[in-house]
Length: 478
Image 1 (cartoon, rainbow, N blue to C red):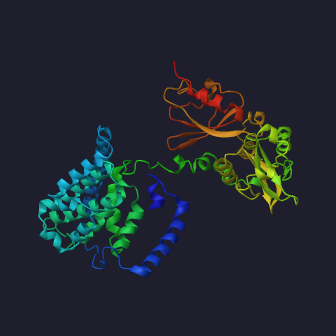
Image 2 (tube, rainbow, N blue to C red):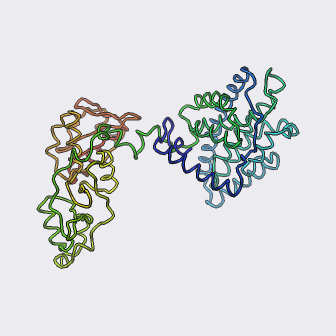
């Protein structure tokens, strides 16, 4: 589920194989101690008996999509009401608990996780419950979950979501099993498909939920009906979700934004862009000598080597400048070397190198082979290789310093440049807009590209100009 749950319309594909391996190992260890029986017991009798039943499962998918929307809107609506209440924080969950307890006096299923009621719903005991209680139970569970968590109490929305879907399926079967021709005799089928359809739709995790619920029952025969129900439910839900922090897709994720902004960088390697190595610093050097070498090279980062010229770590100007001036001539740099930063490798793809630089908060790193420095690579060098390979002809790049900085700025709705083209905006000198993220698209701008409110600009500039560029886009419209 983790591979799907992050996005509305995408998958974290890199996580699927590791997640499968981890799940198999975890399941095997758990089963060795507690047994391998499905959580809801084996259901070998479940099957699709007639084509007409697909229509019924499709109708269940419609109900699941609508109730899923109700679940999400009720949950966040109740949360908003409690947020606006002018009560002490400790009193809000107390109030929520009292309301849930009062509801449970009428409908006991509103309490606890609710899996026990799902098990009842999968057996003949469901027929012993009053019809009104069966019909109201999914909605009572929606309200009790919203009151419990929305008031500030602890809990999750996954378990209740599964129970709501399961009991919705039980309600559907109870209402129509004597009315519609060809309805399955086993109500467990509708309970299982109801789980899949409701939570798989509103959580935008249809594949994971279908697989998981099939494993929870030990039966794969209901996958075809589930596909129909989950597909319809997901279509009805649209972009609504129970997880408000879900991103549209991987383009919108900070972890992948640079990859999609620079797709060509995935095919270029560090060797294509690196420059000859800078003169490194010896471990025995003093802080004053390190600062002098930084000034001579016009750099912010130095590579440090030991007596055998083997790479040891890096030094940054910012770190050295924190040392008292009177101690710089005697203090050795060995105490201040950052040995945890991993250098780049010649065969590394440039997109990975750019991410490494970004994660380390650096504009330059040495390139190392077998602990020996063979070159160096900075953000500007990556851009130069990119431009050369794609023939974009970014003419202003050579004017940038070697320690160019890559960062993002968002165009606000009240910015004076919202609606202007890049040519009209007249950017500060030595500033390049590399890409523009607009909604779910990554755009590569030209002078005629028009900026829009909400655009996220990936900008390359001199580090000294960063604040000037940020203030440039913060300018208010007249």
